[in-house]
Length: 59
Image (cartoon, rainbow, N blue to C red; front, side):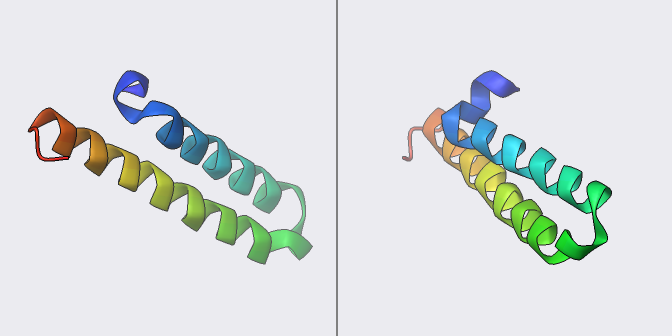
């Protein structure tokens, strides 16, 4: 799975994990943590869709 994600997808997973860590560590940073989770999830989804389109020769 990590091979199909590429660099952008792996960066998204790292951002997701960083966001979850922020939420778990302090309540004051919930907004920042949620923003990181949303941004990371967006990067992962974009990377997966781009990889799928490349497999079909459309991108």
